[in-house]
Length: 119
Image 1 (tube, rainbow, N blue to C red):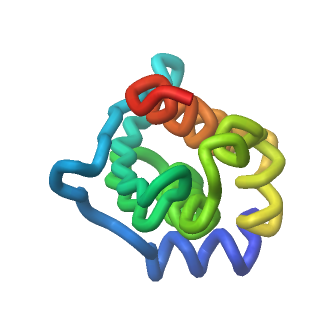
Image 2: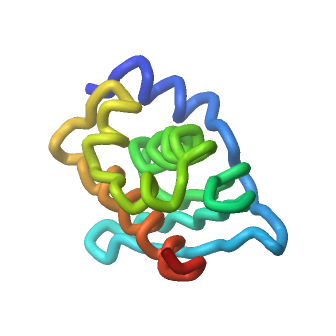
């Protein structure tokens, strides 16, 4: 059902936790399933220097948060703004149709994060 990449991110999540100020943090929720993602990022200039996450949700959402934070490091605000669900899906080696909400939650979190730091 889940790819090896997804299971690896779930069993060995990267970048878990919170970042303290001056990092920015957002919390997003999928109202349909109840999954919650808290995303924190520290910027150096225009680029993400560090990212952390906490997720309360299903296997796919936990793995997606891990993949998201790995993807974010080094990205510019413009690159972050261009994120699409397929970026997360590809990072996880695919998602089953019933788990696509996990990638959408990540995209929502990045957009919310950008809304707090400006463009």
